[in-house]
Length: 127
Image 1 (cartoon, rainbow, N blue to C red):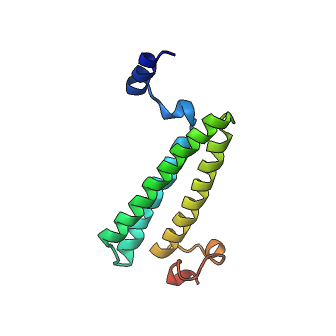
Image 2: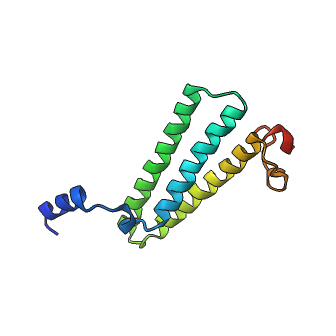
């Protein structure tokens, strides 16, 4: 591909799923679901704080930057998406744990899962 075709591709035809695949939507869904459940948990605890929300959003942007870095590493090593899928899997696992903690903070009974979590991070009804 010539330089001009590459620029045209980036401006008009760039689709992240051609590089990452559908796992991109899985990571995006988990991240957005974590943000929503985190806001619900903060509202339930009456602890909505813009500076804490700001730090959380910076963390989420950092996860997307990490995914972009993994795309470059994957392309450099030629591993055909394996590194990206491992990274997305780790992000999904991290966000999944956070979602379970948020559900617990909201008051949804998840004792069968949260008994393995840090007691300071789960709701008072799940200890």
